[in-house]
Structures are given as structure tokens and as C-alpha cells.
Length: 127
Image (tube, rainbow, N blue to C red; front, top):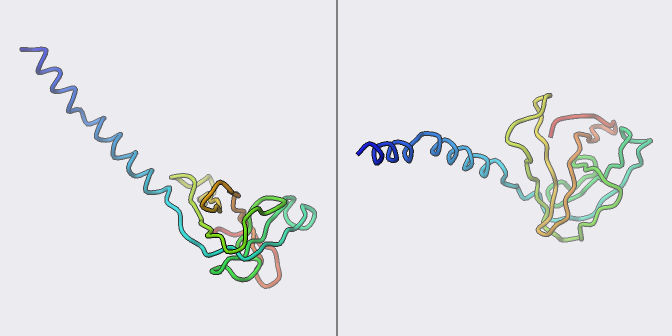
């Protein structure tokens, strides 16, 4: 009689429910947002922009250069392709900023940089 009661208590433990709850929340936080169809891109050298190769990506929703930048030398998105923005981690980094990536429906992925142009000046800003 003791053994079935112990098995019943262990099977209904709150740890399993907590684990399931956390897993569901992480899945929700990893969703992606459609940011338009890819138009084209521009590349800047490390000497010019924050010691990193930056891709300045234009989409139908971010139609001017300077609003969306990602790390890389060459952009492999094709014109007309659907582009998405995806939050990578469920908690912000030490500065309170989230890490993002820009991706297409297949396997092309670039990490989004925190740099953008505002009034023809390169600034470091949160996305």
C-alpha cells in the first residue's frame, strides 16, 4: 500500500508541471516576425563601421538603408524573398538588450547588429 502512494505522489510532483510551463514559454519567445520581402543590400568595411563588416539590408518594410544592419561580408538573400526577424534568447543580455537574427525561409541567417544610421551618423542603438 505504501509503494502505490509514493508512486502517486512522485508522478504528480510540481517539478514536472514547472518544467513543462518553462518549455512552453521558451517556445513562445522564439517566434519570428515578418519584416518584408528582400530588396537589396549594401556592405560597409570594418574601417568605416565599428570594426565589423556590416550588411545594410533593405526590405519592403525597411525600405531605406541604415535602418537594419547585420554582421557579414556578403548577403545571400535573393530579391523578393520573405525575410524575418527572430529574437534569439529568452532573457536580455547584460545591457538589457535582446539578441536578434534576420533569416529567410531556408537556412540563410545573419546576426543583427545594434548599428544604424540616423541623420547620416552611425549610432549604436537598441533594435
